[in-house]
Image (cartoon, rainbow, N blue to C red):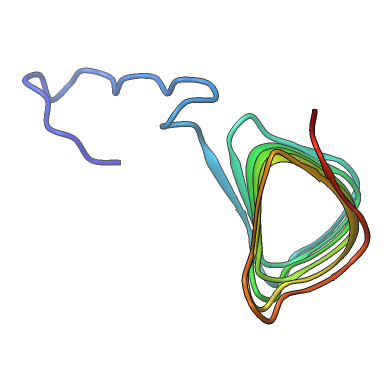
Length: 123
């Protein structure tokens, strides 16, 4: 947000698409969305989503809820997901409750996380 430049009137450098500086969208706890969400950056869900999500990275907060399909490179679940998940890296934190079929390359499941569904390693 703030940076030092030699010329204070110069424009900030553009963000690289899908890179480390890609945009991050935060969907607050008081927000309920019905429909499709697509992002080339990261998405953090603290509210309720009834629909499909495609993003580079997806984090579902402890109070976050998703009912639908999820497709992302990295998925971290602390809340609730009901649907289908396709990702490279899948992490379920201790507070997670997932009722989904999950396709993954790598998986981490903390003690206390609850899962109902099938896991399939991406080939």
